[in-house]
Amino acid sequence: MTSCATPRVTSEERAVRPLDLVAAAAGALLVVAAAVVGTVIERANGSLHVNWPPLYASWSPHLGPGTPAAVVIAVLVIVHGPPLAARLPWRRLVVLGWGSALAWTGALAMIDGWRTGIAGRLTTAYEYLTVIDRFDDLGPALRDFTHHILNNAPDHWPAHVAGHPPAAVLTFVGLDRIGLGGGGWAGLWCLTVGTSAVAAVLIAVRALADEPLARRAAPFLVLVPSAVWVGTSADGYFAAVAAWSLALLALAATRRTLHPAAAALASGLLFGLTCYLSYGLTLIALIAAAVLVLTRTVRPLPLVAAGAAAVAVAFTLAGFSWWEGYLRLVERYYQGAAAVRPYAYWVWGNLACTVLITGPATVAALRRTLVAAPAAGRGLRPSAGPLRNPADRLTVLVLAALFALLVADLSGMSKAETERIWLPFAAWLPAACALLPATRRRAWLTAQAVLALLLNHLLYTGW
Image 1 (cartoon, rainbow, N blue to C red):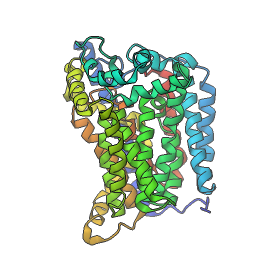
Image 2 (image 1 turned 180 degrees about the vertical axis):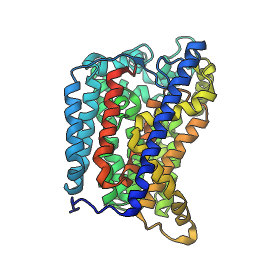
Image 3 (image 1 turned 135 degrees about the vertical axis):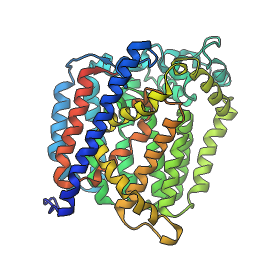
């Protein structure tokens, strides 16, 4: 059992603490700069196509039925989260982490009410549920899928259907087929599955770094501002599928499971599904590569590849070409707002979105991660042997997620709306908060909760 006693603060720790605050302040300044510059641009020519830059949101101060629950859950996690994470049996902690994330995310969504916050999100004109009836006959629908991606195509798909491979919409078709149709069930699916990413990240951090670090990260993985979007968009569901793929890969590579072969195959199946949920999530392969580098093994690769290939073959035989779909998506992308959204703004404005969805604690923790990066990098040299320091292993994992996010940013295929699109990458960044000092965890958790509550009460996010 991990001790809950307050650790002694070293003089070295006292010296670096102010740097955490400087990093958080720098993140806040980035957000302010993005808001000010973005507002000027949007008022001048409307080229950003967002009402409250850098977020796709509108100013709408309000309270709602979820407000009391959200405040109570935040207080409970701040006060009881760190000691419970330290002493609970591991399996109970994982379940409690998921349950707490579900409660927190659900309460935030309910600030906008059941209809607006959950049941109505996936029924709007650009969402998946508007085309369910076009998949009554799956074979022709899949074979013809790419022909409806472009804006000038006959009966073109709405934005989110066109912007993703068909596994995204097929998820909701499947729910409809088993009697769980409509916005309420779709919203609950995304909410429940999306919050399970917390459990997946905990499992992966424990396998790749160590259990004490995973325990320290747990409250931060729960009380994260990105919950505002996890509970209101399908991208939270995509993030969870990607996270479980990586968690199973970590278990297979470290052999911290009774059935590593089954874990590797399941990881591949989920990675394949991830790629058919969102084209951009092929970048999850960068984090998967970091998992294999950390564990110094490629043993799971054949089964992972077999699982991913099985998904690709199934969709290809059904008539959908991933590559053709991607090329048409790129063309569709520049038929819409992306054609005028300025890359010069969004290439850094997107990073301000990341600050908002991961919170000040994560920004402070990423500072520590970057400081530790050179030593961790030296430890990855083939001649250095296994990377033994758990904090260094966590550093590599977090930096891999950050790198994937930066590649997505530089690609120019994520201009705006990254507060939801980047959830699969951002889900890993709060794990770095395990590196924050124990004596300041409650203060940082408070900052996380306050930001999330402000975002959800002052803005209508539109997703």
